Length: 189
Image 1 (cartoon, rainbow, N blue to C red):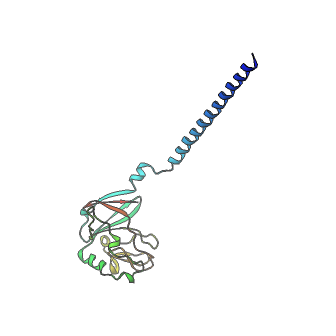
Image 2: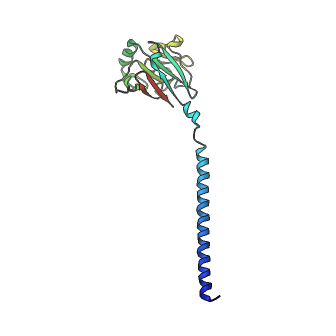
Image 3: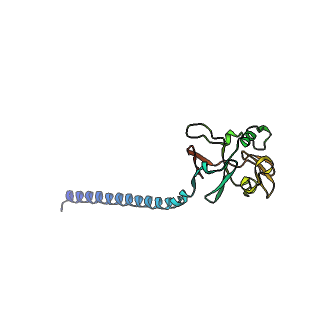
């Protein structure tokens, strides 16, 4: 074998070796990426868990002046059908006197047409003091302001779910919800 042939053979072997190294490294990187995706994806919530973190409710079934309570992801929520007197009481409050100032309108969500259904109020059902579940019209006790009352430590909420008296530091939170139709809401965690 001549020197020219030997040099050509070595160049071909070197090119082949470089290709094999590059192909092996690319395969290893692709395998590591696929394995990392599987590990990261398994940390996402399962589809049954995602389904349990939202709920559609027909609010036309809530009696006037009453409420229903629903659990979403193990957390309680109140859906209240307020009377005109309850709406008027909530709207007439001077918000500057409240511990957590918020207007009644700030606690409502618009219908699909952009208007507001002032009669339906949706709030979290956990007292903002220590997480107790306040009582309301369904239990026959609406506290001093017609809304909810937490008997554990004496927090009183009004008909808009705003804290009015007691140790609770803030209003009952309004969850992420939207109107799917004029009578159906979707509450999501």
